[in-house]
Image (cartoon, rainbow, N blue to C red; front, top):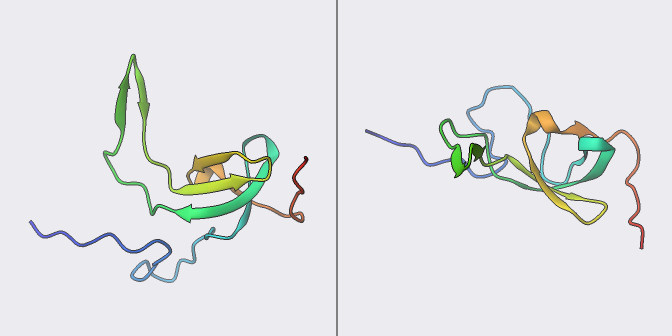
Length: 93
C-alpha cells in the first residue's frame, strides 16, 4: 500500500482548476448570522474519521477554524460558511 502525504493547508495543487471558495483570512458568516475570520484550514474531510463519543453521540473533525467577532472560536465545514458581504463587525466591550 502506497500512501501520499496530505497536502499542506491551502495547497490546492492537483485539484484542477477549481478555486477554493474560502481561505485563511477570509471574512465569513456562520450559524445565526455570526461573522468572523477564518484562522486555520485543516484540509478536506477524511472519510471514516467519525469518532463515537458514547451515548449515541458522534463527532468528526471540521475543515475550518473561525474566530468570531464575539470572541468565540468555532470549527465548521464549507457548507456551514457563507462569504461575508458586509464590512467587518466590531467587537462589543
